[in-house]
Length: 473
Ligand SMILES: CC(C)(COP(=O)(O)OP(=O)(O)OC[C@H]1O[C@@H](n2cnc3c(N)ncnc32)[C@H](O)[C@@H]1OP(=O)(O)O)[C@@H](O)C(=O)NCCC(=O)NCCS
Image (cartoon, rainbow, N blue to C red):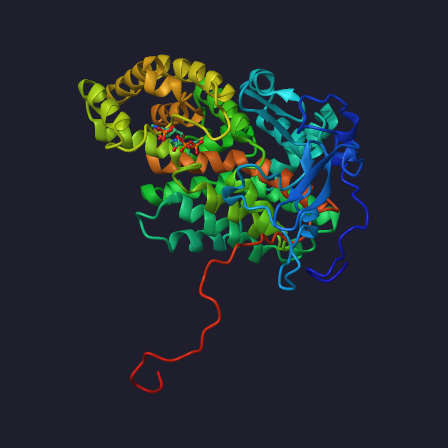
């Protein structure tokens, strides 16, 4: 076996994911092309005239994209000029990779995993089937699926030292902070996971992460509640087992409400991947240094913690608590519109400028779950917010529709999950996408360590003159 972290990257892009992607010849849009078309220039080009020098440059266009490194040749006669860079803070219009995993058309409200519409997967698939699909590019056969479910089920236990690790957190620790450090901490238990170019090592790391994330999440929940940890039950499905570790008390076998189980399974499917979002970008970027997968995906957990990303559903519930009463909704909406009251959390999306396809599915789920638990004061507020915002010109003209987070918060709350646990549920699901994207990045021969350029705007060289008046430290 090669030494940890010393294995060389493969010379060729030999991923199963890529090879399966090339079979998919459907071309849904200009930016969704088969992976092998990468190098094939379409013959089109952009002619750029630099008005500083009056020189004209021809920059090739492929896949409706120009390659930013091609801009480097555009420079003045100044010997210090390193050439033109593209400036795109927050990657508003920059593709950082070629990916065959998820396709989104925000204007049309389309979300597909490996070509399969999210609506169909939510209707019929299991979360583990989707996790397999995301990674391998094709749906598993029965044999592949059974083996995969077996492998995940039999890796759900964590090392007993993890108890001590989790018990060391304060009683009021945010479960995302616990999850983040715990996922990173797993790297210390599996040092050979650093052999990232060994397929067997990658495989077992991916299985471990899918299997142990719900266990760690549930342990964090029990720690905060002051309840004893419940060990995984291998007789149960992925979602049932998670619910059992969350809620089981003295029962010998936990039986979850089937409506809750299916609702959670569908929410996991909806959240499993969302192409190059902030957390996936973080995973790819950190993973590009060839660190182990536990460390790479912990960067995803950290990014997801932020209120503009996975933390949004938590913010939705906090906003509802602040509103306090359904009578205060119109006043609150006015304060959002005037800019005084912050944003309407759970509304708007960077990509979806029509109805979020996931939100449609989740709204239906919310109705199912509400039938079981009934509508309380907070849910009434949420439904009134939705009703007013959907008919208000401020929101409709800006194409601000409810996103998945608006409804997921309501569902999770109805299932009695504490508000600060919502993002953890998101992280369990997104683990599948992070891992598929991490592996795709790793095996993409075009990828290198992520290292953006900058436009330096600080002082020019100046001489050091200390302002300190005392010598030494
Ligand atoms: C998701 C989000 C960050 C996307 O932002 P974006 O695409 O960069 O959109 P912008 O911030 O440019 O906003 C465009 C306009 O809509 C308004 N807007 C966007 N989201 C809004 C919201 N949730 N409530 C009120 N106004 C909102 C902005 O004020 C801006 O108005 P203006 O044109 O009058 O200045 C943003 O909609 C938001 O903060 N939503 C709430 C948080 C949330 O639910 N996040 C979960 C995302 S899945």
